[in-house]
Image (cartoon, rainbow, N blue to C red):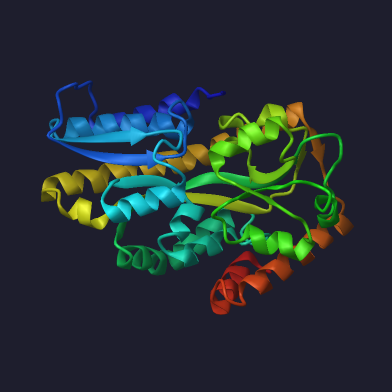
Length: 333
């Protein structure tokens, strides 16, 4: 895996801000947190600094124990475990967030919020509604995060220039996603539903040969060596968040809960900006090794039409049409 030197500066800033020094004293209470991210990924590195910050600020009265690489199951399983009191928190993507409050996934409508500026504008506009919905479902959102800008990647020599080019492919679809099924129905392709840990072995055997995802995730999850082509166009921005069971956080003493909120906000901001920077760098590294597909205006128009048709379909039962219209307005569509 690749990590850039500026990451140390980000982690250092977090450490300085919360006054971290090594402390190995046993914590009086532990919050168990699940994530699909590998421990040595950028996400994992920030989480380790966050855990050290909480240990220091709480005088070892509180500890964060992260379960990496999907040890607690996929995101749907993690949300279920938080509801059942078997897990205290999780770092999840929009797919996991949709298991808590489905409207959040509207931020990843295909072909809509394709730049960070557009995404952040939508998050700012809808933040209150989303956080209230998450709270009403029994969770506290400690901080928003980013995953990266999604591109289409393919394995083999054939390029995917138009939606029709996916019809003969075996595209990966996250099993719990509620947007991708509609998209593949619109274009007439048959996706292969998998959970994230299943992607790499299926890429190796060519059971899947196409996927849409952020460059940073493709790199950090070691999918890159199995892929040959990347489309330069961004089709969505993938987001995530740190969420905890409200019941569990409310059970903490007031000062411990405040430490969680304060340090979690710091970690989320540091991670959010760093992921944006590293996703751009990861795309550059992958593009150097792959065939980069740059679409013509006519090809891009075909994708835009299918994305628009998908959004219309999603407004017929999956999402509130007014919410989709608001996202399209922010996106300038």
